[in-house]
Image (cartoon, rainbow, N blue to C red; front, side, top):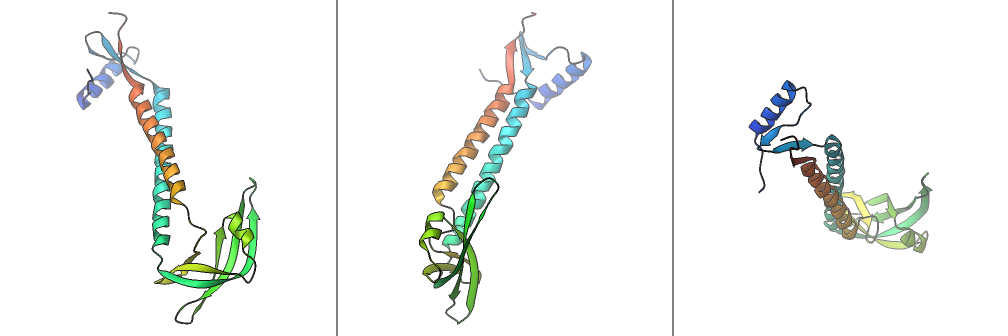
Length: 183
């Protein structure tokens, strides 16, 4: 039988712990005591925070993905430069400089990051399709590069959900009932 402890039981526990100098756990009902694992609570809160961090990142990535998919403007872009930067951890970011013309005649210059395979396939003076926001053409992206895939977003969501569920389960198991061996 699963029991739910009210605010009154927790208050009673705190009062009793103060009276006995925190030496004996609270006896909630005949023969059973509430045991609290402080390290379990700490681990639970850390994993819950990590889970929330991943879920928040997933939500932001999903919003970015949806924002990019709503770009209604299409144009032909012209590659002007290619460059990359390598981080201290060995990861590289591949950048592409390009320009495109708006239907009204304006010229937009922009830079976007691409996957390595796309970056290597494109040469300077090549053309590529550009998607842009009609209300602000400076928000643009090459049609097949630079945005996160939904598979990545889903995997990070699953990872965040696992951390969150593990943290909640760990928090619940940190408060457990045990038989009092002294009675």
